[in-house]
Image 1 (cartoon, rainbow, N blue to C red):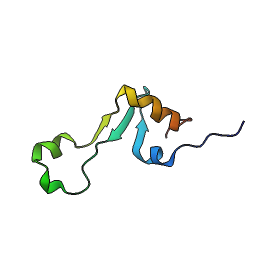
Image 2 (image 1 turned 180 degrees about the vertical axis):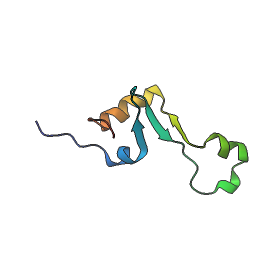
Image 3 (image 1 turned 135 degrees about the horizontal axis):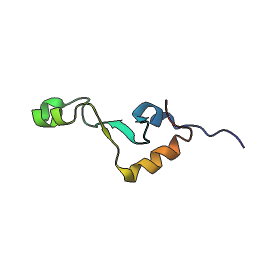
Image 4 (image 1 turned 90 degrees about the vertical axis):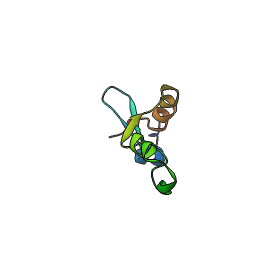
Length: 67
């Protein structure tokens, strides 16, 4: 059986925690921030945990986990 490849977009965008949860950066923080209010920018700082409905797909795209 050949080795499975990890989707290269998943390598760049997600991290898997020790407990198996998936962390991701929040979208909408790259450009055009002047049109967003300060509350939006502040609340979307850092990373957040991915919803359970999406975790299954991300783990399928990363068959051996992410380091």
